[in-house]
Length: 245
Image (tube, one colour):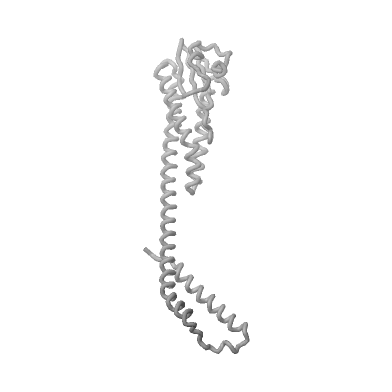
């Protein structure tokens, strides 16, 4: 299993293979006998629990080879480009986001990318310190630092925007609850005012003669219906009218 991680055709020191387990593990740099092996992670995808490893080997002659990104130093540059493109895409999503749900989705994807970018920079920094003669590592390390810093700034920006969106939503909900409590209070006052009258009328059967009894039946009903709708509309406007704090 461990042999499958490092290509069998690579003539790397045996210590590299001995240090590999069945899974990729953390990002790290291995150095032995003038050889350098970088065990890195591909940019994490959403809802991805297991990291996919990318191996970059520099032999004693200074030739770079990768497992799946081609040969030469350009293989490592392509690896860094993958991170840069992903972070740029998330940055564009952040600019378009307006709701807390959208910010949460960006944060869910950005957090593992930021951690992977930080570890990537640390690995290249470690390789640079242990192999100072490998001059090409300088630009790679500096570029990785730029990726890490960009991811950190974007993560902070997304978190701040999320806090603002959540606070704004909470304020809207508080305002809505306040208006609902005002409307409920007004309804309670109306009920308290009319309830005794309605109760007394029901108990004593106070039916007044109003003259509608002798009119054609549909007309009184329509008049009462229209009057009730108008009065209901007025009461609705009164109950739902916004109250300034």
